[in-house]
Amino acid sequence: MTDYIDFFNIYIMGNAQVLTGFYFLTRFLQKKAKFYFYILFALFWTVLTEVIPTDRITEFLIFILLLTISGIFACHADWKSVILYSALTVEIMQLSYGIVNSLLSILCPVIFPFNPKIAGIVFMLLGNMALLLAVLCYYITYRYFSYYETVKKQYVLMILTPILMIFLIGEYANSIISGHSNAINDSGIIIYTNHYQMFAIQLLGMISLFCIMFAYKKLLQNFRLSTELSLLEQEEHSLNQYVEEARAHYEKTKSFRHDIKNHIMVVKELLQNEKSEQALSYIGDMESMTEELSFPCSTNNPVADILVGNKLGIAKNMGIDVCCSLRLPYPCFVRDIDFCIILSNALDNAINACKKMDSSAEKNICVTGRMQGDFILLEIENSFQGNKLFRRGRGLSNVKTIAEKYHGAMSIKIQGTSFILSVLLIIPQQSENIPQQIG
Image (cartoon, rainbow, N blue to C red; front, side, top):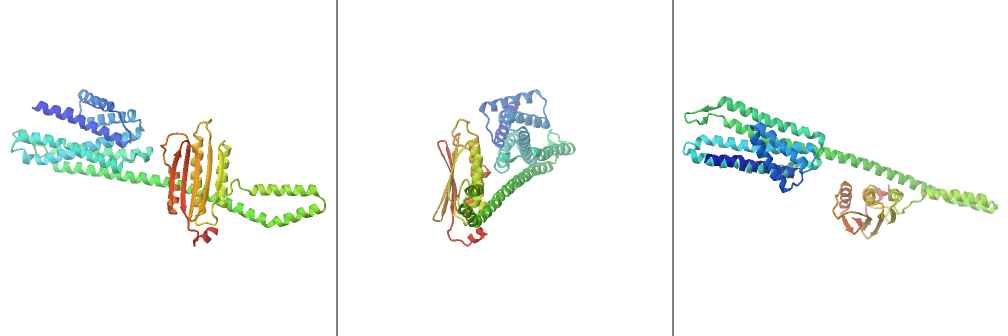
């Protein structure tokens, strides 16, 4: 009977523990491993624990080593992140079994004297229920604390070090408490071990582990938010430059329009005095001035004219066919900076999509937009190569945020080789904010 129990504990439950840990490691890393990797993992675990004399620390290291190797070669994940989540996986398993075993050790002196054999079997089965506690902790970690997308490689040691420290302190406390408080009675049963202290230590270790993960998640979120804030500040700075350039351009246009009568008068006098060559030269100078003041794309909004003209000019220089049929109201309830965020992000994405296409493929970008009633509909269509799956980045999120700010919506549609981004804005034609926009 004892042989069967040992076989069950060592081989069946032992492999169940390590395979459960390997499964959740793949979930933490947001990867998938093929079935034969699980078979190889269990096989290597069994062989190594049979060949190498093991204690708790040795098992801990073997488990981490196998998880790390499997995470790198089976999941193709970053090795620093694999080490972090491997240590976390093993530590959760160790603490779960430590908590349950300490709790059962507290109850053992009470139940064991009635029927030692039945009590031993019951405690063996209940001891293996610690795997359920580990699964619960794994699920909580995966659901609330798995933050793989924003893991900063340089900050991995910030959480790996305390995880290892919790394990070592727990093992040290276990050896100290067991070594100084154990006694054996006449029946050979260990008594007087202070399991209450070990239970408290293991429980506090698990709580500390979750506190560390919570703090680490918040730290990474703050790093991510600070990075996004920095990018948005850079974007706002560049967009403000567009605004200033547009306003300067607009002032030049107003100045030219103010002086046009004087220019016409000069040309008229030159022609009346039969100085046709000087008149033609003067007209040529005027033509150069008008070319400097003209926009490649006229949208009725000076800021949008500058931005769209700049972006489409970049695209045209890259060999991309461009067209623009965009008419915006001016002045308008929509802030200039919001128009810039929509158009700059949409056109940047369109240019990047065209850059990724084959050199022989036809590339085009078309910008259209109009106002009808209280609605402004903007559409940016560009060539697109690939499947219908794509990753929505920060740029499209900013566009969606602006659309929702004006109670509108953003939609994305893929038709064949065309990617179409549509943005709907709801704009009251009469608004108290329009004079603020003019100013």
